[in-house]
Length: 534
Image 1: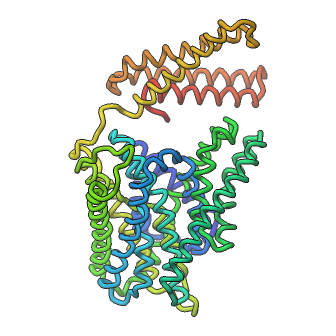
Image 2: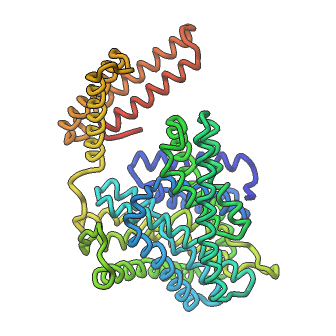
Image 3: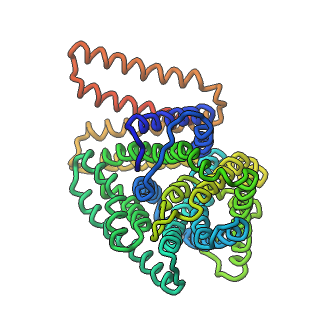
């Protein structure tokens, strides 16, 4: 990636941070803020034009983004909802790919069918990040969130595999459907197999690591350990990263020690935040160069192409979801966990097909030249149209999605926070019961004083949560004073801790350890008692 100076990278990080703070302040979904930020940066005169090496874009951005999404997705939920996920993540992806390709080839003068298929492959996989961010505030059914997140996880892989075939067809100028079908099976199965092999080896190493820093380093390297060798041996690096993430993530509690998991989650949160934000800022900085290359095409033609392709993307999703639901009810055998699908749910799922950072990274990764040294046909137009589709689906559909959800009547009366509250009460009750049983056990190897301290600890937390349940319905304004008092206590403890360090009573290492505990306690109390974390 040719970015120029280190200062540019620091400026990018600063811009992403500012947009993130602004999104949090106005309670705005982060992906939508990023796409608006990219547009805003593109309109600012005098900023440096940034160009990126296409060969490095997929390597830098995609492995960690895909691995992280897979790491946090529960395997049991994927298996339980496999049929609807696969119908949307494979069938819908290829239906969108073909429809967009044919529409672009027919509508845009000079766009060959191979280049049109590249565009179709890029915009075919939706990104669930914005939709789930909105849904979680609206209390939609958890199964809908699961299907959307699973679709996003699998369709990234299927769309990017199709993308690699389409790009190869343009670069080499040759394409055989029969050979491509065989290659697709080998590349897909090989990628999954290699990813699972990497996950097995990485899991063995994690079990033997006690140092959190080493464990986190291995975590960050794992997507690249899966992606790079898989790509070199001719199988799908994308699927390898996804398979490795699913396998390691669903065994993390057995493979990693608690400190590694806690600190690793914070680092992955930052990496996702930075990578997703940076890709939109970079396209904003590259946009002037793209528009310069498209200067000979009238603006109204570009707008027409963008509107048409966006309409096709949205319409195909609607048609596919409604037809698949109809066929599923009449042709396919019912699922064990089959639930009633009201028409409103189908509308919401259809309207939630927003595109995001993965599509943008794939567009920027298009090679600059083909095998004979000539420019990749219509590359700048493909990148432009990709960004327009992302903008239309994220901003237009993202802004209207809450209205669609409310009109559909899908909002549940029980929030995720309430479900978490009840689960924690059950777990704390389990802890108290086990301690009581141990207290009654003759000749217990555990000291009675230890058991009584532990019982008091868990019983107190249980009592606090039961109290929280009685005031759950208070308005935010009613608890502002309580929240400020909690923050004041934590701040006072931090100030006293700093004085203890300045007076030489404790070392700086001790100060950091205690400060970490104060911070985590405040975050836990904020979320459990006041419904917000910061």
